[in-house]
Image (cartoon, rainbow, N blue to C red):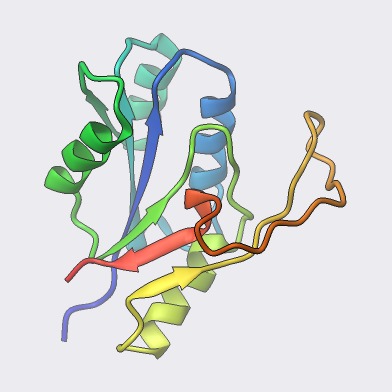
Length: 147
């Protein structure tokens, strides 16, 4: 039986400081790195992300297209995971997010779509009282099984 493996896909379409925090949140997971990979897709060059690529063994792709769909397609082509977790460049994962996703898919082999709640935070990282429960909101809350 093949074990589950997660591909975290982080697209970014413009240079910014938020993407570094998103990558760090994906790196700082309670789930061991043997169980997931990080794929960052950019349409620009970024020295700091290149350094993170070498230091943390993340994959960085460059796509000369602003569309999100082209970034996701490029990432899917090189992904090794049978579970895909999406992380928008301006969002963060809780430190136990991937462990929770991994265990959810591992414990329910029929699970193909997972959508967790999210917490809104301000620029300082503090939680704010704002909620949105629609399932089509926030791609960073979605993980799917690649079939």
